[in-house]
Length: 115
Length: 120
Picture (cartoon, each protein chain N blue to C red):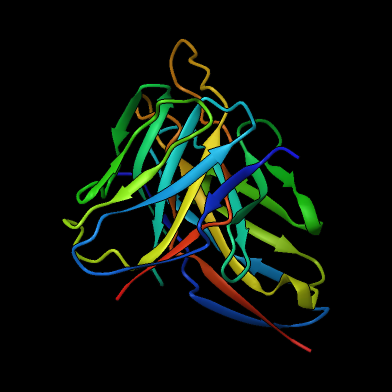
């Protein structure tokens, strides 16, 4: 069965430090992968997505993610974190044939930023 | 402005009552989705609809019902049969899926702001 794992429930980084949020997936074919961000009490905003092609994907707000098929990973990175990046981050994978455009979400990683 | 709207933002319900959550989109998207979010559990799919007058159950459809009479609207009813309805509910939409020879592509989903339902 397809699944998404975000191993870190909560991460705290200092403002200006680099960030890497981990995402591992289990999928039988080439996956469609997404990262979303959610501020408290709000909906989800798309940060970036991978469908095919270049394995390093650039997104909004200075985020990037790298698809590594050999490691079944799609980790999210940012070179310098800003206080406004504090939020919850979700990794998601698109499901297989005949299941429409449904997504499977990880449990989320909450990011705190220290001044 | 194009987007997805959900109303109300906060909703309180007494036990045994049915309530309906609204989701409207003006993005001209064909597919719409309802998710439930609980702390520490990510998002779980309740129902989805790929086209008007058609919808399918997701992973946790018990105690919920939907309709899709118009392309832009996908209301969710939380019935009294839902044993633990207190949660944050998110609606999403995406463009029509493109079917290739060997696989179905997954279009990007865009989310509304959510409705927080509390059962008193």
